[in-house]
Length: 140
Image 1 (cartoon, rainbow, N blue to C red):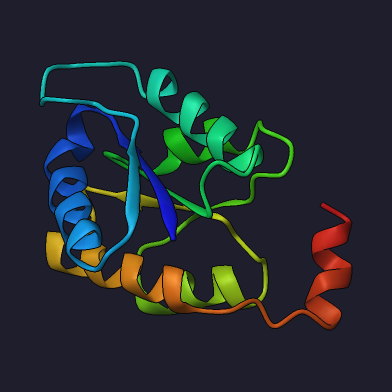
Image 2 (cartoon, rainbow, N blue to C red; image 1 turned 30 degrees about the vertical axis):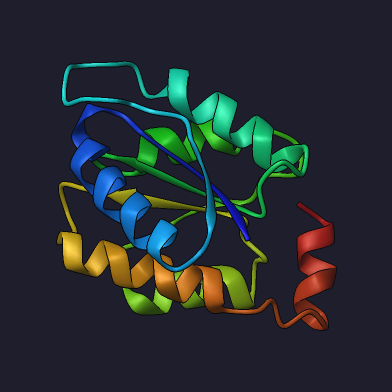
């Protein structure tokens, strides 16, 4: 599976750790930065990642910033992207099952690194249920 990952300075450490975990699991990674903890503007990383997901260059995207909100709002500006802010196992699972989300947005300042890794694993391994949920997704 090809997975795009990106973060701002607040999410850099999480991005690095998640990136390594995914590579060890055999996934191909498209890394959209940031490349350090130096201050950057999250849209500069979220827009290219969302574009890659929207155009089928990645199966899923992972975006990380301090609150998760900025990257989520940015990614959702792209047609075909359904970015979901996830902070616990239920939100990660339901984002896939009910909303067919294709980008997970993580709040680095509000979840532990261990939780963030777990949320990514849940997100990429959970299937969309379709059915009545597909009707709703079609209305987005």
